[in-house]
Image (cartoon, rainbow, N blue to C red):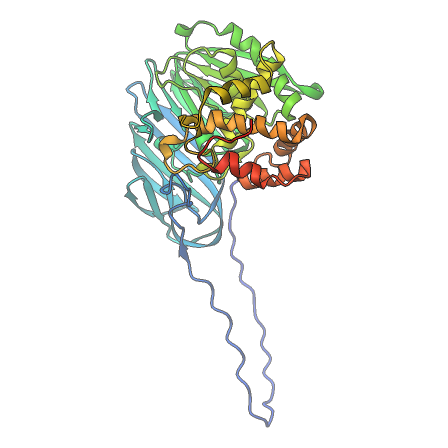
Length: 474
């Protein structure tokens, strides 16, 4: 877990060195060994090594906290400063941030002006003094953010709406509205202050700390203390009806739900009433809800998908029950427990899709095994469902395909069939507890499944996750 860090000051002290001269011995003196040279500063690697998005991320540092202060104007432009608190294991002569579009006005590192350059979606920063240990980067920028087009043709990043704009950051769209280390393996706390014309509302992740109006503008301050991957960050500005309620969770815990609804989409009464029931179901199935807030953003943005933005999922129109269950299940699987590499996306989508089957089974629908059999029988060996395998993706355009969602959920039901109900429930609850707020790999899930079940599951997972063919025997 990466708790938010406060600003720090670096103080250099000088000490006196006392030297006593002794008479030389009559023997030949041996030269004292030279003090080891201080390690030279290095440039942070400008890629996190992701299997599907090799351009994203930087290996030179670990972000602990983002503070984003963004002012939105009615013409769609922004002025913003993002302050990043990070740590580096080695002195950095330069490092990069991911940023797409926008004009950078100034960069400061530990309070000193830094030089910078732009190359594709990289903002390369050269500090006046090498960045080492804990350091702070402040980037001031402005402009009209761009909409990012994903490999599958869908939109993410900054998407203008009829009354404002919404930023949807999965998989790499966060770089269209703030500079960051845009890899799911580097999670951080967030503070986001959004200043907008007072007629508009502004949503982000986490807990609403304050909302103040001055000179015709309102600043909404949001705080997300639990680590958040950049792709789960959210901004939604527009004419929303805003609903506040209290949600009761297990063990007398209460959290606040803030829901933002485009008035053209109704009042979302059914969805707002269902939300606490779905969270109660999630706690029963997967353990403690991992965050301090909840809610939704519901509008007609035209992107054609819903998104599990942390604590406050986005819906492109009022969701049906299954979609609401899916995105809220992601708060455990994907948001709290996050894949390190985009090639492991089935750890998000397969698990959330499996939650839909479990919800249906407990609310008058088919059993999970009946749902499995229906899909398995309907898809023959030549079906696109089996190609590619869930954990053998090569093309980022396949990221949100049936392999991740449908074959992913079939994998989990086949696993339940293999290890039994008790071990399956223990596995899911142990996974969300042990790996809370971490970035993980499929290999870690396989290891835990074998530990919980006391079975060698290598052949099982090889068949279901890595072979592009229909698994036999079901």
